[in-house]
Image (cartoon, rainbow, N blue to C red):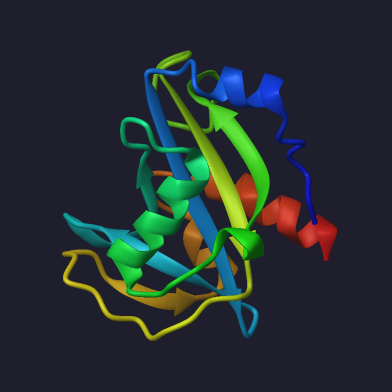
Length: 148
């Protein structure tokens, strides 16, 4: 399902943004794992967050999934499927302010277990099409549906 050709040119471009983030579309039994916003349990999105200093997008994805959900995913099992920046209209952010890389997997270990304030649950794809990142999530869901 690889859509994002991740080469050195892409790597350098992605690292040029002020805010960098990763998220992961984890699919299981035709549902997706969601994590709510801390301040609004009905505003659901993909597990993920900001890339830390000296961390790759992939490393961020693995770390954020573990922190937010308790599940363990491995780099050999995640595929980068989409990347978008703040000037695409998919984020509530300014032009060239942020970039997010979305990874996809159906392979994980463990059980949901977290100390985070957000609500973690398996939901239907459509439940991600409302809320703060609805446009971005809708685009990711369209990509996944076209590839299956």
